[in-house]
Image (cartoon, rainbow, N blue to C red):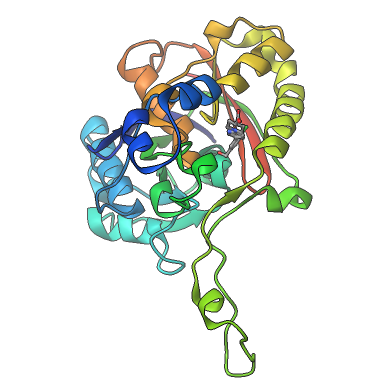
Length: 320
Ligand SMILES: O=C(O)C1CCN(c2ccc(-c3cc(CO)ccc3Cl)cn2)CC1
């Protein structure tokens, strides 16, 4: 049983924050941010949580596909900023759109979330699972430390997703997922403290604080250029477009050079959204479809490649 993408959608909060806006609240400036990351602006929630962004995407997917919520057999949400540890954000979405026949689960793979979730979803298609929603969403603005200029300027809020449907023809030609847990401390966010009556807590304030995002950018950067390039090089002769996680424009420069592929094959929208973590590849895919660079059913071959906290990374080769 194969699977194919039959609809794509994305959603970002209306509130746009430019680099100049950030220079009003942080010791930073447009020149530094743009030259080092390629980011010009990002969308920042004014109160919407991750489930709200994902619900907007889910509603768009139903509109675009013409399916009713009751036609959806499962919902997988990828996020590193879920509304709760429980219930899953996928369950909140399931309830909101009344997808009464869908089971629901969250996937936690940081910026690799959409690629991980799409791979899991493809394996679930078959039998009674004919149609699934795969939505990646992150409200990174609630995770970042807004006093840390080295990370606060990098991230944005957003969500994107697809409907995956069982198909007689093969469209997802290969997918590979990877992890390197030894480098778990390169990107951390949201540690929940262990507290109970049997633990004598010395500093109460530390105990209950929700750990804000911390990132060892240099380590991740070199990890990505090395490992990601190595794992996508083998596909190169058959790819029309590369859709890489939008973490940093310099990454696209370096990976394209390392694998000897034209830079213009590497789609980019980081200038508008910043790093939306799990959502970035999903938003990039939807925008490429909506502006007709990519067309469902065209036979175009694309490589989705995402990398980030975990450390995790993953690649999916898709024939549209
Ligand atoms: O040039 C500078 O000083 C700084 C150097 C550090 N930078 C970084 C470093 C790492 C990332 C990053 C993050 C993730 C997580 O989504 C995944 C993959 C990457 Cl490569 C993004 N930016 C910004 C410019």
